[in-house]
Length: 127
Image (cartoon, rainbow, N blue to C red; front, side, top):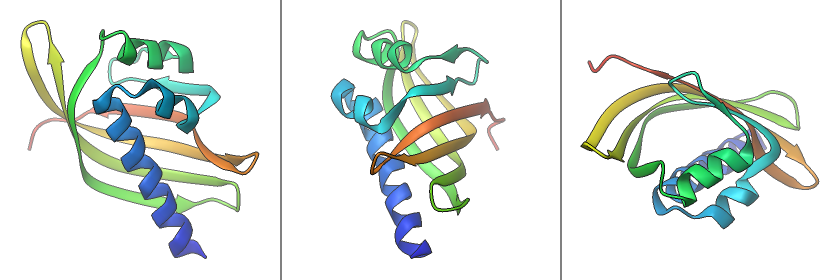
């Protein structure tokens, strides 16, 4: 059971990262809880709508998100905590920006579906 749950959560993380790169607002809407707390590496906190609008409106353009490490810890039957590192490539007005982040994500099982309820990221030094 735990192995299936861990793989399912890893799949949701891959889907979310792909939706961020593709600008897929509809998929992001299904993967994020309505009351998600999304905290960026800058410390800026966004609501679900602010986060999705930033991507779909082109203000935040992800070129690539590459998972480097990822640990999934089931915390009961309705909560999973994910910690990991990803390498993010973003398109900015000044060109491409590439940086690694460490993150913690919390997924909650509610109404028969897993959704991201919290995200906190920190920019890391390039090793």
